[in-house]
Amino acid sequence: MSRLSIKSYFRLHLPVAFTLLITTAVACDLFIPSPTTTPAFTATPRFTPTPLPPIAPNVIDRLPARGDEQRVTDPIVIYFDSPMDR
Image (tube, rainbow, N blue to C red; front, side, top):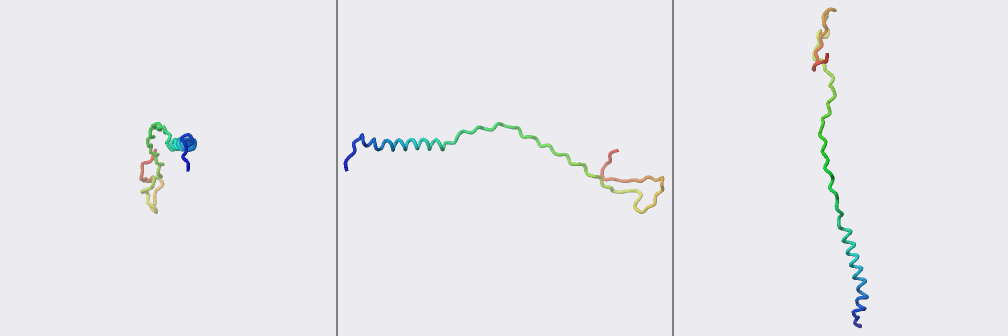
């Protein structure tokens, strides 16, 4: 085996070294995460409760009771479980 001169050594190894250097530089740039922007602050909307639908009133009591006789002039009285609008 003959020894290579410095000139021929660089001719053989310089392209390989240059290729490795470029490949390493490109690979390092690919794995660096790009900077992200911080999202702007937005105010959180306040909770507003949805009003409940009105509940139908229930009849609690009535006069006259079922089966009782009543004169035509006597009033019919009905009691509900919630106040009624007039």
